[in-house]
Length: 208
Image 1 (cartoon, helix red, strand yellow):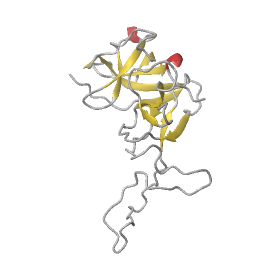
Image 2: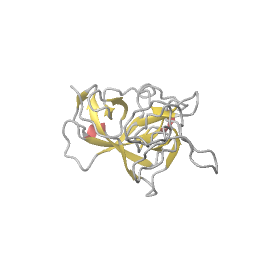
Image 3: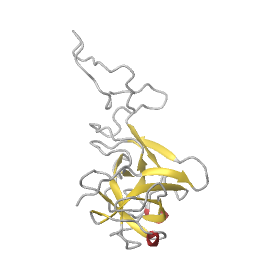
Image 4: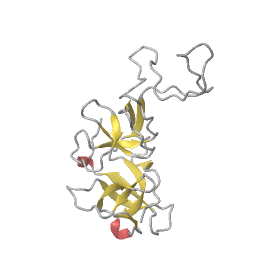
């Protein structure tokens, strides 16, 4: 049974400050959605969808939750500007039609943003509280007050391609990365409703 997932979203900060965020070059061929756990590729520093298993705190571990979708760039950071220079390359900007007598020219939709080769994400610092759907090994599950204070892992849903908090992953130090701090007050608890959580700091890659 698949879970009707939704994006993981930041909902509040414990301190009352704004969420901490960053934008880094995007790894090539990434197609993840907004609300996806992402990590840094050790080989070239590009941001990619998290592999679902690395929880050492080093590169490859979760470094944030994306707040924008990937652009499926043809190479890592394509279109990224150098300091104090214009944006170069076309990145993933949408083109349409052809330009008469100009075979190399491109039509760009009016108002279309330039793609700078980067993707943004919310940092998984202890101060930020996130919300996600609750499930159990590929099935919907009803979050309970007894889940509060426990550590669980995360799994990607094969149906919606969004991630959910997975009650089946409950072995601290092995496959857990989030700490449940409350049931989401916007929901009446039922199968597949949301929980609020912070990330377990030893498992994630913090960028400072």
